[in-house]
Length: 496
Image (tube, rainbow, N blue to C red; front, side):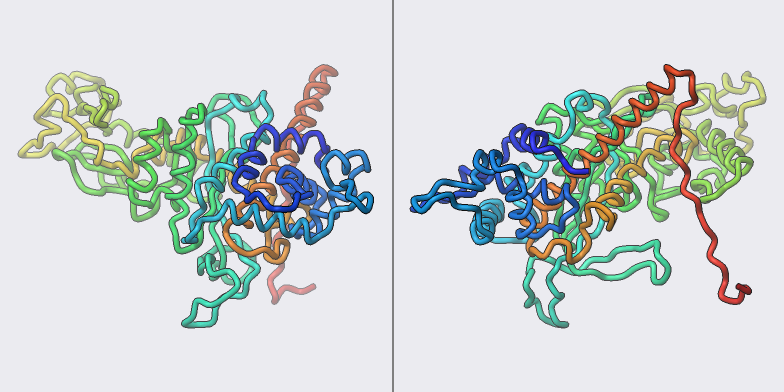
């Protein structure tokens, strides 16, 4: 799917990236034929035509435009000697000036503020106006981006891309599941539907990219916490254990302060009991009664491929665990403090230390052996919880409840984002498709690739919505996505 010229120009103009970059370029003695707006347009058109991310393809996409468009965009310009067609050296020169303006004076593997702002403004401009307020939920993930440069020799740092560094990536392909690569970690925040809201197109709304020796979670947190300043409030943030396992100051705390609600998969080392607070057990981001059965505290998510019966049994245990949770009775104050109450005082369980609770019906769990020396959580009606308690693991839904599992299932939208831009049949960011090196050029090209990908997703979503409306009007069943057929590979010993 190619992007219409008017659509690509509208994205660039709404982002206001071109005049911002143009103001940073040096004023040369000679007039520069290729403007920043035109080269950004050429990058989008080249990627939309499934061309590799080469500067030669930028020129090829521009000179393939109608003659009137070439004259309007400066691809053909009147010189003293007659009409002059844009040359590759002019494309290379303007691209070099743009990259220099967006780069740091002393590269350190992290993007400059102007580069981050420019790329995210392009992404925001690629989202149709009717979907900007459709959902505040974002699914976040990072992937690997290998540089075209050969890695430096062992024990040295000399190579064509010194900003890149060694990183680790996992693979679902046959063979080793993990390997090293030399390059960068790009991250993306993909818009997904609300928990009870309608479906929305899964559009990449924000991005970040750093060298592999830096933390991609910190870089993405800085980008997301900037969104409320741009008038875009944060809602649910869905992330996997790679983000949840970071220290709270790097990920969870800044996002909560920005108004986000975390829905995340906990790292195995963060699950289960993690200490106490006034006698209450800290586990999975919540506070539980000191007499909570140990097997319930060690409950993890159901195994992948669990049957319906196994999932129902797991959810029953999760519901029983929730009865032992201390209930939150106040919202967080300005300092992040809140108060919680004993589950027996709330009428969720029966406990001899709370005589009133023993009058409840026996369908509720009962504490048979209460502590001989009741801690503060049992002796007091409520206790105060400071913000540093379970700061890393606290989230919107109890982990690993059924509500958490249903909500967390939306995170696959982030994985589909990277799957589409790594698809060799469309936009491909694998090594060799872009032979430029350095953080700034790769960051800019990746932003353009995500813009093109957003337009494809938006077009497919609009077409699907129109088809469903037509079928509903005709009384036909709505189309559903076809489930991908899984084939089982035959074992080597099996007969042909």
